[in-house]
Every structure is written in structure tokens, then in C-alpha cells.
Image (cartoon, rainbow, N blue to C red; front, side, top):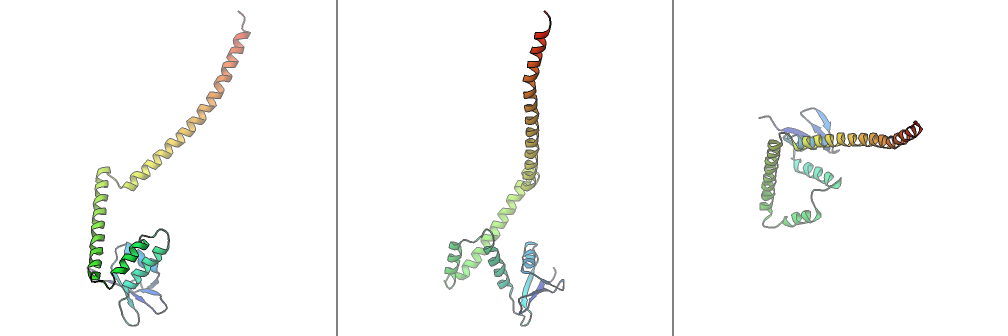
Length: 168
């Protein structure tokens, strides 16, 4: 098992990744999380563990942008548990609930992949491409059909005129 990646946080709020010897952004830290990397954030001066504060900062920034995941009601309910006798229980409950959700999500993906032989997104992309091809064919045939539909009456009129000129 590899050592936990250490990120140092400096007083100027810059983050320094000791593994790659480079400064990184908060978005880079978020990507580490998405990639499943184990890390901890330490105060560069005191060595204090700041991981939770950085994680909360990431959540705060993402809650402000786009579609928030945590409703105002849910956040209010969480705040009510601070100082409550059930505070310790609540954190454990939320952690286990999230783990159960992730396991169910993985099972669903596996089942969908097994049933379809591919990921749902790949199937959706194929359906979209097929629908686009059908739409293009429809438009092309509609254009060809209109061209021949307008040409057909003109041809009939021409045939009638030619028949009228023929001697009997």
C-alpha cells in the first residue's frame, strides 16, 4: 500500500503537492478525490491536519456553482444535529448511507452493463447516432419525394399534350 499523498497548505492559501513538487489548485484536489487518490492536507507551518476544511471548501464551491446537491432544508437539518446527543450517531449514519448508495449504484451499473452488454451511455450514444442517420435519410427522401412529386404532374400534362397532337 502506498503512502498517503501529502498536500501542504501555506498561509497565502496556496496548496503544494509534495508528490509532484508543484503548487496545485483546489480543483486539482477535487480531481484527486474523483480519481480515488488518498491524501491529506497539512498546514505547512504547524503540520495541523486541514483535510476536512479543504473538503468542506470544495463542497461549498460546488454548492455555489450550478445545481446544488444539498438543499437548504437538508443543510438546516444537519446543523440542528450539532450539539445534539445524536451528533456522533448522525455522522456514522450518513457515512454508511452513502456507502450503501454507492454499492447499489455499482450493482445497478453492473446489471445494466450485463443486460445490455455495454454501458448505458454507450447505448444512448448509439441510439442517438442511429436516430440522426434516420432523420437525415428522412429529410433526404422527403426532398427527393417532393422533387418527383412536382415532376410527376408536369410529366402527365406533357404526356396528355403529346397524345392530343398525335393523329388518330
